[in-house]
View: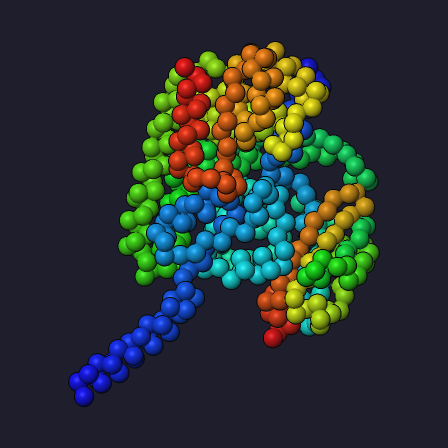
Length: 111
Length: 298
């Protein structure tokens, strides 16, 4: 019975909205892409990797997360024209992404 | 001279009207949504004068859709972005959306959202922790669907006041249709007070709660045949609940249908319609599902 209830619980979890998760946010400031990460509990991931993908989903960079849960890197002008996607996977196994469209980048670059 | 004037006037009129078509096409407001029900509501409310952008590819679960950069760019450019809310889709939290043009259509009934069980697990260095969850197929309580339609209509009127009278007229027709679904489901529920049901996926929390239906669930992949282990788990659930009816979210194979019948469970197909259906529209398909369920309960 306990295993049955546990199975049911997992099933419910798998198809409903999760409140505990990794949140990624990225923005452009003076030509630098700033990536910020945080768990929904408020904690900052202790380590992990950041992948930067272009509009064709090709990986441009893979960078380690800083200890404060952030990463900064210069914006590639070619990628900026079509936008980039930031993917983060923490050492705990949580993952999330953020999409920066050309319009987002233009706003952040002061264009 | 008169003929020439008419011709000139006619040519001018033709040129003006020809020029007007692309302008008119560009001027059609665009409403982006994250679920098929909201796309259907927007289409109804717009009365054919708007374009609806529901970018999730056919066959993809909107709750798990990951948009591309061009998808997000198109959504950012919409006149209105209508979200189901209740955590239905994750992508709105993965990109910058214009706050003034984005609405959560379930915000007005946040206190009525159904919290589901939590699961505790651990991985990596984070230790044991819990995930809490919210059921999000809100529109299957048709009274909540009406609230979502009202919220969408209000937002559309704010964004496109020149179309207000048309939207208000279409809103009344849409609300009447949803009220009819609500009445049918209420009547169905009154005749099913003691019937235990199992659904192929945990999608029907609001439907069950609104209409007094006892629906437990398994989680079967709609695209795959259930495994022997899944059948065994279903039998265990049937033994625990005494269920006599099984709700499929998509049409099962003939073999699965037969095996279900052999277990003593009546097959009922009731698509929750989060995704765009291949045939038909929201209202007629929901009515048909209610009729199938009602017939199975008799």
